[in-house]
Length: 120
Image (cartoon, rainbow, N blue to C red):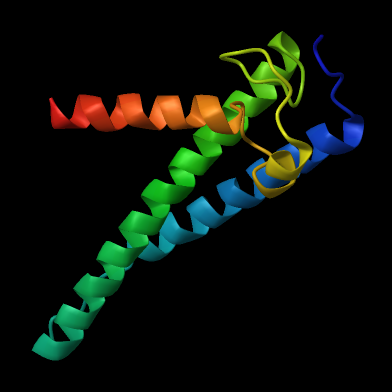
């Protein structure tokens, strides 16, 4: 019952991946800039901005991993099919999160497991 991925859907995922790769490269390049130690207030501000940039880079890297995983899953289960339960993923969910490979119920299970493993 695998849903056939359309060329448009795959292209959209690939474009999103390319956009994130470009954004990551730009952020990493900006992160490499030197901090000038002339003014303590400026240094503190620069360090806060660098922390924000690093957090954004981490978030984008996770999103990129999700997109690449979704592109790979297209070959295995088809687009819009939950890789855990095999049910069709709600089209509205795919519209919001085109990189998702889990239905809402299975995503909750995955998140609970991840949270539980962080607690242990």
